[in-house]
Length: 598
Image 1 (cartoon, rainbow, N blue to C red):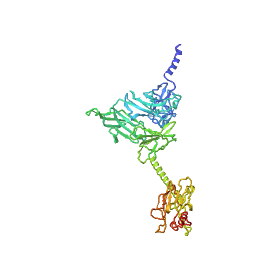
Image 2: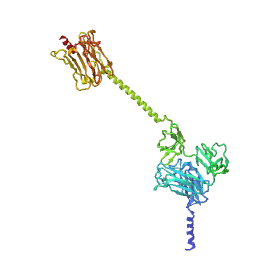
Image 3: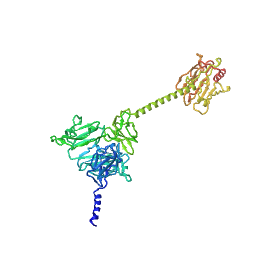
Image 4: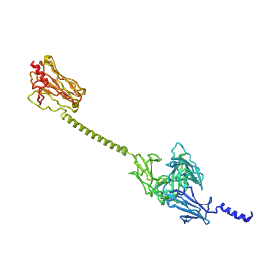
């Protein structure tokens, strides 16, 4: 092949070999370009093939040229305003447009430094990072950047631990530092479909004095703590802070080597460093003093940040200026004295706090991410004032009140029913006088409804005239087998001695006594001895021909339920109950007359 044909082929080869073709825009780190989040630190690079161009590059944002000629376009902290299309042009060739979409929220997964460790550490050092994803971390991997390279970081999983969180050992390397982030590496998903975490930047330094910032970049309205630390833990006698090369004066320090920028604003942006004077007195009391040793510089950027919810500490309600309605809410609770928060099960915008500790909330959009955390609300549980306890006490008192009311009503109904059945005077009805001219007799005083059902029968069984003197007998027959039946027996024995005996029933006893006239008294007397719980006792003592022995006796009768016993009086005019007159002569009187006539 002659030189005439070789030169054109060589020129084409050199064009492809050295990238003299169409440039390309790439994103570093390799985040999904449609899933950038507010405060991500990214760089757009204009590449020719696999190499980053050196210079002579024109950048376009939404087709408008930008005032820079660098081959890289750096964003210390992206915002929503940075969303749009980007192109680069080199040697008359313009790249394809790459769209960047910045979400005004936080990623679905969170990556944080464990135990609030420092992010500025000595070269070769390491920290522990914690990755958390509520839906689980199967198929997740982490990546880190070092220089202009990006590598994969394997994750070692502990099968005994929850699948929603992992601990990652993160080295800072020997360079200027590394940036770590994690993403879902499940097969079948495109890069834009993969969920990811936020990024953590670890800065390496070779100096003893180190400037630490609690947030970098910082979000407007947050409090940022700046500290001047010394490796090895010596006693810091003095720390001086600088911003943009000038000493910061008039600040109120939290301690000798620390101060806080409260409610930070854009005016606090700048380049910070510090000088420290310290001694290692924990090694020796006479340790030498190291004076005014400087730290490395740190750039503090302040951006608006995602919308911040407002947590109402009185109502424990989470709200915010959302552009779209959240799908749910995330509640975090930090127990008293603890450092790590716990996720609560509640997902609504309002909760009932019951445990002592600190509460925060965040809004959640399932397919995108989270809002930033709200303000903190501290709740102190007061003994005896828990809403649950109050509700239980109120319900108990209400139930007790209803129970007492029900008992009262039942008691009144029972008393009313009993009064209707047995009368207001305890179960005795007055026996009216039917005919004052005749001998008296005791009529039925009271028959309860129950006794009416059971029935009660009395029988007077007399001896015939031919049976001899004094041989009359009164017997009580049995009314069925029911409980509470009454037996009456009247016997007249030899020598005119009468005896009236009452047998017993199972319950409530009633006793009657009828005292007849003696030889000297000539009058009858009816005495009620005792009534106790519907029990009435009566005793009947009859007259004998000789008063000596007591001779007639009416003994104890018992009934099961308000049983009633009837007693027959003795003698004309003497057997009348007080206030009553008998209509007819009693069978007992008939027997007595029969005896007297003999």
